[in-house]
Every structure is written in structure tokens, then in C-alpha cells.
Length: 480
Image (cartoon, rainbow, N blue to C red; front, side):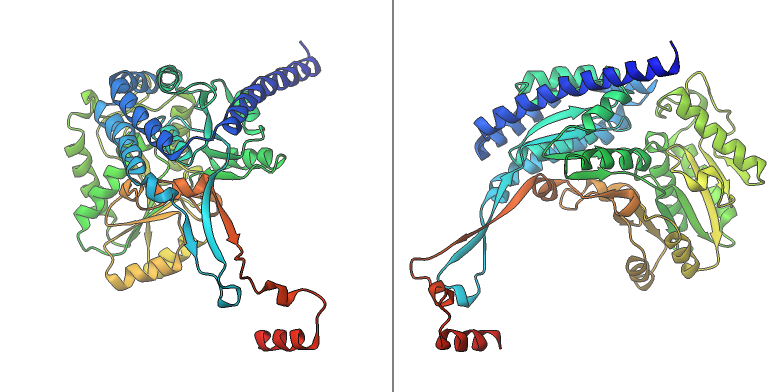
């Protein structure tokens, strides 16, 4: 088949895929228009979802490990199961209060009128989720969308087929297809999915793909929430509680073998502390993963292409003179797709591992002169999804918070800001648009509909024509 015929065939498949998914979307939207779920129905749905997640936990953990090649029980529980349960319970407990009208003040000139905000569901929400946390980044936004009264179409990653199969069974057990439906398929299916005229589209993934998703959604004026990534810095401001700081950074970096959008992507460290950092990092890694070669608590890289990408980054850094510091005396394991946790000391800023989000257990460490140099280094780059601050006094913390912008900030630890259900999760600039979790998720997938109710005693007739001299005089007085 020549290139021209192949392009025609590809376009035909795309059109067919769009038509099929458009029919599913129309089915979901028609059902939603016929019956918008009440608050009590939404709470019941959340309760059923939570129970189904309990029932399917063992199957899901097994499937996730199969998709990764190996992922330990503890990381799947902490990274996917527990967090989703917490979101569902929190949302269900507060949903009644969140759904109430919020009365607003009416300016005295319009008394005795009334005004309020009434939270309305948007319609059908499209959710495109990634492979690295296949439950958290699928079910948490879904729970928010359902809580707001919407119907949902899900498109999970093609890199987690075993998880998708179990997830589809779970969803089918709980929801009719017109309320929640799961669409599976490759990157072409994802592209077609993003082109549908949803009432809102949430995408979690890379910045490069996020740009394409946004362009595709713009054709339908579909509003988007983009949860992307980027290079999240960990700034060590000084030697205060140094070993604890290093332990937190390394622990956050190695969770899920670094395949976490909010993992520390590089460290900025005062000059003279590099040797201590390497030593403390090795101690932390050895405590966490003793007998590394046979340790089963360490996660594999998701697929061969990503494994090779990480090796290529390390090889490029070595060619350009960066000092490579493995945290274990163990080679990378191609058979199990295990990358040995590795520090890269003072790499050239032009290297791939300093230009791209690493998404693996490789951590650049860069020595800097002072906190002002750290601020300048971060501000010269796209704004990150997360910012981590260690070893800083209150004054330095405030300086960093005021001078740097990030999707979220965690001081004296890593990752845990995402687990706080009262805090929103989302990026800024290249790291994303919009935010959700808890109340912020309910708000994200709702329309805060403003309502003004006029009173029978309204004085608005005084501002209707004809505009007599006394009315003009009144207007001048009100305008003063």
C-alpha cells in the first residue's frame, strides 16, 4: 500500500471512529437531558462506586501490576486505591452542602430583589486519563463529574489494557452505559475522542499531547481542563534538617519508579552539599529497597520505549561530562524494565533530561550560589506542576512562594499536597489549565449559574424611558 492509500485508509478509520463515539455521546446526552440526576441519586452513585472499588481492589491491583510488568501492592494501594476511596467518601459527605444555593448580596439600589448562585451540571464530561496512575487519574475526576450531576465518557490509556478490562467491568456493574461509558483504543482513538463536542473535556498527560487536545477541543469550543506535567523543582535552601530533606526528595522521586507527574524532576542545591546529598540519597534508597536486585517493592518502567528513552537520557548526560551516581551497585535490568535509581550531577542545561520531563528514577542535582540563583533558574523555565521547598526558614519560604509560580507547593515533603482533598490539584501555564479535587472538582464540572429575582416592589421603572428631568437628576445622584 502506498503512502497516499494509507493516508486515505487512516482518515476513513478516523471518521468511522468519530461517528461511533459521537453516537455514544449522543446517547449519553439524550439520557442526561431526559433526566438530570438529583443530589440523592448522585450520592447513591458515589456510594455504589466506592463499594465496587472495594470489591474489585484485588483484581485491579493484579491488573495494574500486569500492565507495568511489576508494580508492588503497596504502591498501587497508596497511589490508586486509597486516594480514590478518600475522594469518593469526601465528596459524598459534602455533596449536599456543595449543591445548595449560595445567596449573594444585592446592591441597595435594587432592594428588595434577590440574587443567588445555583450550581448546574454541564452535561456530558469527557475524561482522557494516562497510564501512570490508571485509577486515581480516571476515577477521581469521574467522581467529581458525577457529583456535579453529569454523565461521563472515559478514555483510559492504551498502555494499561489489563486494568482497562477490569475497570470496564467495574463501571458496567455500577452504571448504565448512558451514565458512564468506557472507550478503549490506541492513540488514534484518543485523538478522535478529544474531537467530540463534550460539555467539558479533562485530559491528563504530557504537555505536547495537551496542546493537540486543546486545539482539537477548540474546534467545538469545548472547555478543557488540562493536567499536564513539566519539570518540578526541589529547592534545598540550606543544610537545616538536611538528611530528612534528602529522604523526602528521594522517596518522592522513586515512588512508582519516578513515573509520577508531580515527582521532583531536579534538585537545586547550595554549593558544597553535593557530596552529602549523594551519600544521604544512597542511604535512603538502601533503606527503602534493601537487596535491590531481588527487591519486589520497586516498580518497573511501563514499556520498552520509555525504558529506552531513560537510558538514552543517561547516555547523553555521560557523553557531555555529567557525573553519573547510581544509588545502587546494580545494573539496569532490561528484562524487567528496571532502571537503577540514579543521580546526575550538574548536567548541562541543554541536555534532554533538563529539557524534558524525565518521568523515571533519574534525578539531576544542580549546585547553585544562593536562593536568588534558584529563583532565577526556575523562572527561566516553564512554570512547573509542583514546587518543593526544603531547608528554608519562614522568610525564605515566603520569598520563594512570592517569587515562584507552580501548580502546587509542598514544603518539607514531596507528593503529599496532592492528597489533601481540601486543596485543588492543577497546573499553571505549560503544566496545565484548571484544577479539581474535592469542592474544586465539583465546581470545575458545574456551572455557577447566576440568578436574579426581581421583586414586585421593584423601583426599576424609575430607570425606564421617558427620561424626565427628575429621573436624570436621580441618575446623576446615583452616579456620583
